[in-house]
Image (cartoon, rainbow, N blue to C red):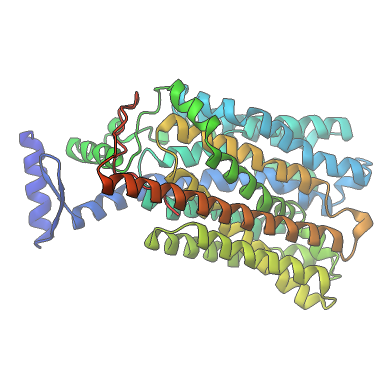
Length: 473
């Protein structure tokens, strides 16, 4: 250890003035208090920025739902079918470019590639204000999906460069819950063209700043000491992740495409994202169908997302604390299913509105938990990044399906779409329980091999020792 590192360590110990048990020895001691200080330092540096990025992305994705209420359909002479396809086409572009975008993120590093994503989607969002017909709208929405592809899996992947598996769930929820703030506060805008312009400008400005302001990896930032950089890197290696962003590993890519667990994650997340995207894009329309009036309906989109903001963070915190994912996930998806059932079968509008609370809060809180569950069980940066892109890409089919739901012909009750979303929630739960069963069996095999002494360490080309690795349930 260098003289500078010794001096920093001695000063930290004097400031702490308390004896704590040593967690591990990496050539110098890091006790629990110093670890917490280090993680808080990382949190304050990167989490607010990630929250802003995702908030802007969510606004630019779903603002078309508010534009619809402000007569965009009438001014562009759109049929109900054309408007539905203007919603769905976004996700087709998103799906096609999700995996390539996440692989390019490895090549160009997160700050560069995420900056590109933000600037292009912000510019396209502003350009949507100039469309005059269905053809222009459909082209703009398609390229908006292409531009935004890779952001969500890229941010999930990026967190694995900084945090252990146990810490990722809460961090995912912190930036993901910013989307709830977008849903809560975007209802006050008026004039559909201004919605696109006002919400597109910040994306371009923040995107340009991202090139310089978003840190790449722990070993390349100046606000960490060398001992802190070394500790974070070793800590991630011990947690079965690796923090290299630019090394592409073909073996891990193949492993991602041949792992049955990835496909169960894909099926499960697809189910609840149908409901998630329905609420995100069409909640103003759904609430208008409850006959509360246009302005009141727009204002009433805020409370469900405000509640979802807190439930998302609370569920993720408890999931991290217990280091349990599947049952937390199934619980919150069940809440969403109950919400859709209430909206489908109850005639009282106040009860229907309560159902909207359950549907929004339940489906929204599920995503950070299941994405952290995915990340926890994918070893190696290339596999984790590829699997994340595969899962989110496939789940975006839920957006295509959602765009074809809640048609004007179903108004004002929208019963068929509510029941369809409830069925999708049940699909998510069944898939998650099947995945939990499969992971339990794999863990049992690993334990049996370890206890019998027949455990053979397979040399991996990526250098990761998985002798003590166990899947998170």
